[in-house]
Length: 118
Image 1: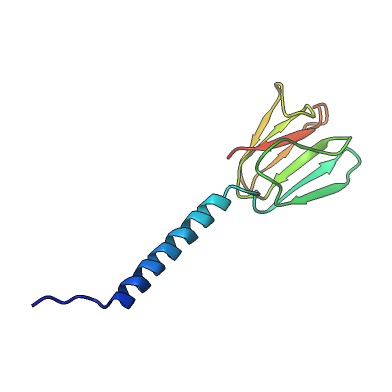
Image 2 (image 1 turned 90 degrees about the vertical axis):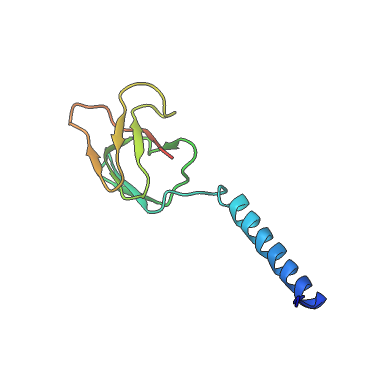
């Protein structure tokens, strides 16, 4: 004895499978757009002002204020690298893991930019 599903059931299953496939493709295709480092990056400027940037983009170089920063708190979910240059280049970098901080010595140059390691 052979059991065969009616054509309407087969079409419904095929439609559900196609819809699920399209949903998966749409989600994975958009997942790379606008990725952010979830959480705040806070830094203290040379004038003792605290600046917080909430969920910055993981892509690109981020500059700090004109005075730079003497202390940086990475409260995001992604590790970061601090630079003394404004364009995230050169030597004199510092690696700051997620949920850690970095404080410059009084004689050190201020941090002027940062990138995320992703």
